[in-house]
Image (cartoon, rainbow, N blue to C red; front, side):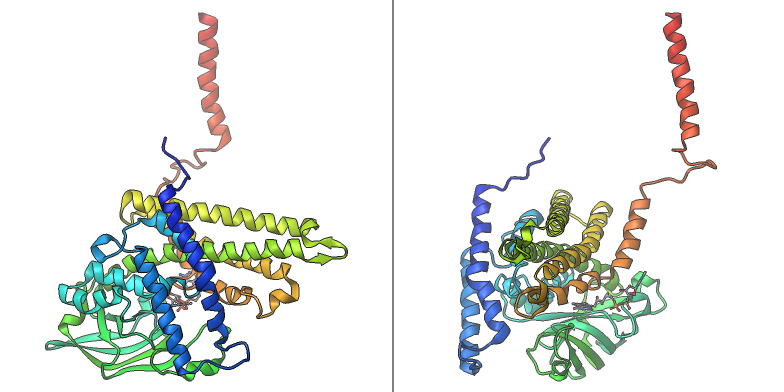
Length: 447
Ligand SMILES: Cc1cc2nc3c(=O)[nH]c(=O)nc-3n(C[C@H](O)[C@H](O)[C@H](O)COP(=O)(O)OP(=O)(O)OC[C@H]3O[C@@H](n4cnc5c(N)ncnc54)[C@H](O)[C@@H]3O)c2cc1C
């Protein structure tokens, strides 16, 4: 028996170091960046933002000095090779912040793109794109979803071979970081007549190539619509992209021709568990806030904490969070143990992807509700958490798609009954048991 929930003291020191950096430096950075003004309401000028960028670089250097830069990576890619369980314990601290992943060199969508190039890229692609991405010198995007379809069956964006080049045409939607990326990994149909899983290929497309167009720089709910029309370089957001006769060299093909959809699963499986790890951090923060508020706020002479329905809500959040966290850790442990995305692991990843959406929704909703009008205001972090909660059920595939996949994977462990009634139908089981016990009774009397 080797089930052990303890953390090695040496690694606990790393976790404590991360927690300290998060509370002392990264959360204040998030808070400052959300307004970008000084105490007198004066907005930061260009020099001021240069100072903030330099400060971010300094924090990143501290992370490097601690040996935690790119902590999701193996030593072959310059990371510490911690494995998924340790990654969980660190990511749940970073989940409390927006800037945390950038400070630690593990921000989406770059992390998934690093994995894709590391697994599928040529030496030349690794040198040109992966290495500077790992060092945090450039940014990337992943351009797969289309405006008319989230599912690959309907994708239209195509790449056609023309001599030594491929010509890409089509539209992509919700390309995170599309406006800030130095290059984009674009999924395009290369052979529409092939079976579904062999139709598409991935290409590395430099963002400054002729024909790469940002139609709008779409943002999540909560951001004013006018921001979508600011398509200037370097902006965050989820770009609506158009590829107009974009010519890339044959060497831009990432992985084998026709292996795009299969290759994308490598990227998405890892990304899904990392999102779940950070969701633990978000929910822990929401529950921490709810507990402090319950102890501080009074209603009709009692503390909120003394009201039974408030207690019930806090207990429900605690239980949901604990169960979710253990499931994420268990999935991480399985990945470390088995080392590849087997069917058993895909089952668990689908499960935590599904529950991340529900747990986020429920715990943040209860925390907002408990805060009353303060919860509805934009003066706590709960507002931005709430705005982001539904995305957990949509990005990297909707909850329904994952539930359908999970059910299919689960059902492979079962056989149909070959009888009119199921194998567990009691009259059948009782008849069998009666046969067994009649013999036992007979033998007893005969002895
Ligand atoms: C924050 C965020 C970041 C993203 N970043 C990227 C990115 O960087 N690159 C990228 O390419 N894409 C990105 N996406 C897009 C994301 O991958 C898609 O939104 C997702 O795959 C769902 O596709 P869709 O939006 O077209 O929804 P649709 O496929 O239109 O689905 C809409 C709804 O229909 C229902 N539905 C769909 N299929 C089924 C089914 N099989 N069974 C039952 N019900 C179903 C579900 O309720 C679903 O929510 C991002 C999305 C978000 C929210």
